Length: 334
Image (cartoon, rainbow, N blue to C red; front, side, top):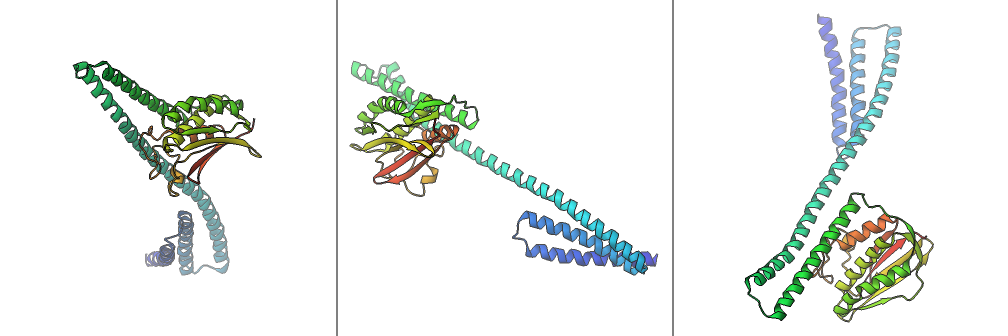
């Protein structure tokens, strides 16, 4: 019984010495990655087992032959165990990191969704309150002269159009984010798209006393979906007109390069703060300073632009230029 206890004590002492040294190493490496911590932990575990077995073998006074056999067995078992543990551990670490990344993305998406709901609720609440007040005034006979009644009707219709546009933007953005957007790609003459869209937004520019200038030629043929490209350009133009002051100019240019075709919308907004440039295409971002949020449409237009351009296999970027900013869209050639 004494020999058994002595063997147990020696094996325990050897294992504890290695384990304490390993704990000290892990403490000093606490700023390292999870993978390094796992590798050190596995190595310490195998080393502690080997130390315990060797201590017990030494106490048992094994012959040189038996000790050599034991060392060979322990060496092979230790190498195999450590290799298998490292191989499995690497997969576990990768899975854990992937799961953590997924959780972070889910949390970010949830925060993003909450922010979007808050923005949209605010944007819907204001026109709804106005429509309700005007409808109640008409219903109660508070206003009766023809001109005021006609003005109330016009404003109700305008607010209804605004809310319909916001709902339309939400539907389009949900299709993009859900991956449900299916495009029929074909050769599209960008010049035809530009002329149609410019003609459509010209009244908006005229009402805000903004000059709208499109390049007369040089437009490329790109591979894309004409309705979606028209929406991209329309969103960019309306955004540019909204943020350009009276007597300002919004220009549309385009051309070809080695990567395909491109078009650009340049406004006179006064520029975007450099710190805000990376966030311009985020949902609900409306800008600050020169880009006043007044009259904006929920901050969804540029997010939709980014999603539609990405669906075409292109990219969109924004940069500051003299007196304003420039939105550049690159698309694959037809």
